[in-house]
Image (cartoon, rainbow, N blue to C red; front, top):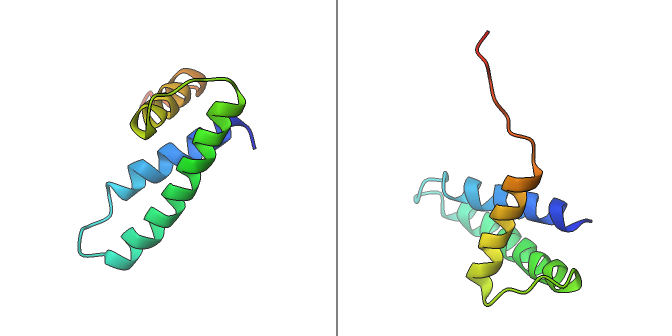
Length: 79
C-alpha cells in the first residue's frame, strides 16, 4: 500500500469518527482500533519515505496535507 493510500484511509477514518454519535460506544471503539492501526501504518510509511514528523499530531497533519494536495477535488457543478 502506498503512503497516499494509507493517508487517504487514515484521514477518512478520522473524519468518519467525528460523525459517529457519542452514544454509539461500540462503533466508536471499533473505529478507534482501525484508526490507531492506520495511524501506525502512516507513521511507518512516512519514516520509510524519509518524511520527518515531530509527533503523532504532526503525522496526522501531514496525512491531511498529503491527501489535500494529491487528491482531485470533488466538485459538484449542480448542472
